[in-house]
Length: 244
Image (tube, rainbow, N blue to C red; front, side, top):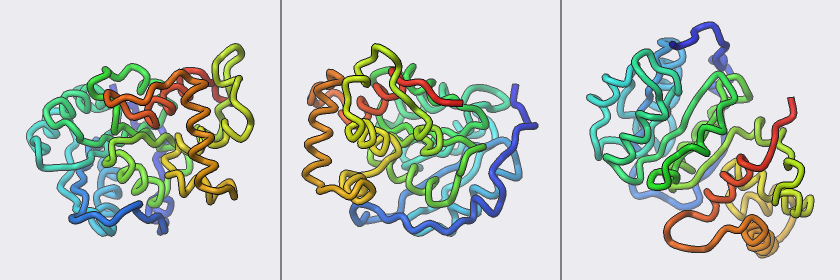
């Protein structure tokens, strides 16, 4: 059942002009589709994406059935997706669409703090998912950055929610220094190594050194089966709590 009563971002918030830039020039715009059953929010998302630089808006669906008809494999690079749809669950839809099109990026949107759902992703589709809350500081810049991060196969989590995370007692996160935890939080909000370095006022090489230490502390192996940045984000979700 979809809850219509929870607040969505205002038009002003969604139209905020961002200055985020991609890490590298792309040869073609990212093809993006919207899956959202609330007409007002769906329309605002469509309008925002239709005029965004580096983005080609493909279309909008309001139900699982409509999304399956509209977004056939190869027609989109990234989907923004409401978790609760009238005829099904957006996460399950995203999993099936990703299996039909490996590499498809998915940006989940919800009026609730449901980030922990990402911990339940099957291993074969765990990369390329991002999560933004409709009720936090959702801006044009943040949404477009989440789309770009997901297109790269990485994960971006809502910055406002991540800022409230703290290590759980007895978790491996407790072994991280304050600086390492700050690096991990920034990594979880989709920042590149350059972006983390700029935010913290440290050298980019220092960021890489911190990441190496973080991966070791969290037991993350460098192998080809998973993206270590995604694994680190999921570890942060699994081993932290959020302040109210």
